[in-house]
Image 1 (tube, protein in one colour):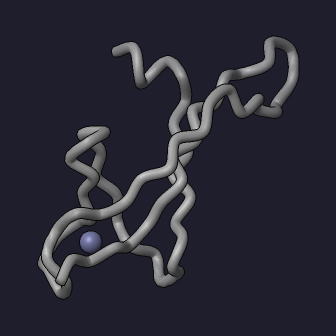
Image 2 (cartoon, rainbow, N blue to C red):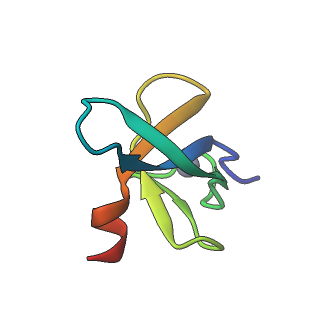
Length: 69
Ligand SMILES: [Zn+2]
């Protein structure tokens, strides 16, 4: 049985001259690790990890710049 914890990865883009971010892209992630595993959740298909913050669906915000770095 796998973990099946889910997350929504949101790639954001700074809007020049404002403090707000624009959500550029949303990617649904699903953990494929065994249930009750240690450490962060991991989606091997998208090669992403995230930390459980206590909810079933975790939102992961990532500025576009970091993605390209
Ligand atoms: Zn997991």
